[in-house]
Image (cartoon, rainbow, N blue to C red):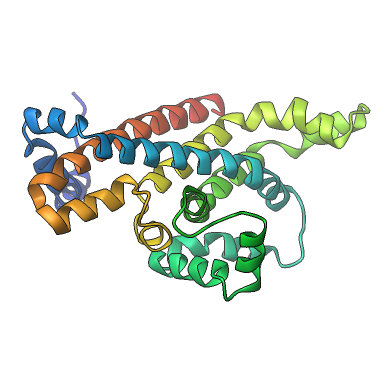
Amino acid sequence: MKRIEPLNWLFMFMSLPLILLLTLPLIKMTFEPSMEMMIETLSDKDVVNAIARSISLSFCAGILSFAMGTPLAYLLARKRIVGKKIIEGIIDLPIMIPHPVVGIAFLSLTGRNNPIGRFLSDIGIQIMGTQTGIVCVLLFVGLPFYINTVKAGFESVPIRLENASRTLGAGAFSTFVRITFPLTWRHMILGIIMCTARAISEFGAVVIVAYHPMTAPVMIYERFTAYGLKYSQPIAVWLILISFILFIVLRMLSKSINHEYR
């Protein structure tokens, strides 16, 4: 049997409080509602709609991040752009700023007193109080996770392979489709999952942009303030289970990617 070094024992002991901090609150909340309450919660049409709305709109944000974020991730990974560090800082900004600020920013930008808000209204696009607005803020908070993941994927592809393809007569688009994309598609799926998972949990920006229609985090808040823990906990548990499943998929993909590049 392999002997565990004293230093490893020390680090394990020092890590225990952090592990307990992360797990104990979630474990207690997960097992507190009875199975009857959990099943009863799913019989509530409003709860099911809120959870389904969170998942579907978050997935929409993930797909949009793929469509809009992939070109930018490629440029940041492969090209020398003027102000590249500033662009990367702007991309990471949603991670750092308080998310109610994001909601307030969207509110000020798309209001009737703003030219952009008036223009959107004139062409029939409503942001405030709509699912469109929810997708916008979910994309805002989730996009950094997609771009940074896919950017790392592009950087892991040896540039000599792309250069060899171009030398053999393939164009830039053909090289991307035949060489770069097959080597980075797992990172793209990983980025979509990360963006989606982050979007599912968003509350601060969503509650300002669109209290209705309710997403699951907003409904948890509404049920807690109106009725207390008894009626908010089961919804929270279902959301935890969904997030847990997403991150199991995330870890499996990460393992697959790491194994492929060894």
